[in-house]
Length: 95
Image (tube, rainbow, N blue to C red; front, side, top):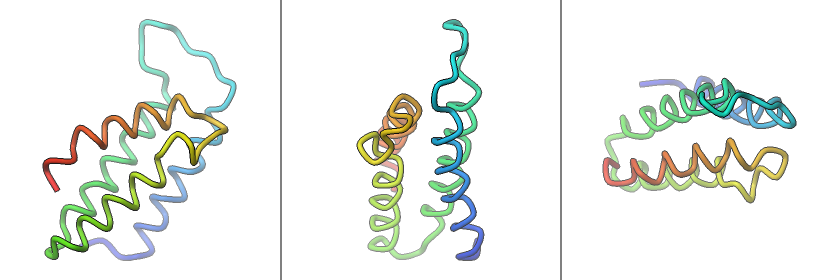
């Protein structure tokens, strides 16, 4: 199981990705690099949450992830946050 420090590092990286991608334009045919990186970070965070043996802890961890990635909490880059938030919502059943 991952340590708390590793989990904090993933959250910090997620916040940096959301801030760094502000104002960049990408081609319409491909997913922006920032979105792909943010999704990868969120998937690792989600895997960490799913590894918890306690259902209550998994649900709390999932809610925390949704809070971190919510577009309203990321006004500097709502597009990336929206894509990741929707991906997390689609994964909700696996918690």
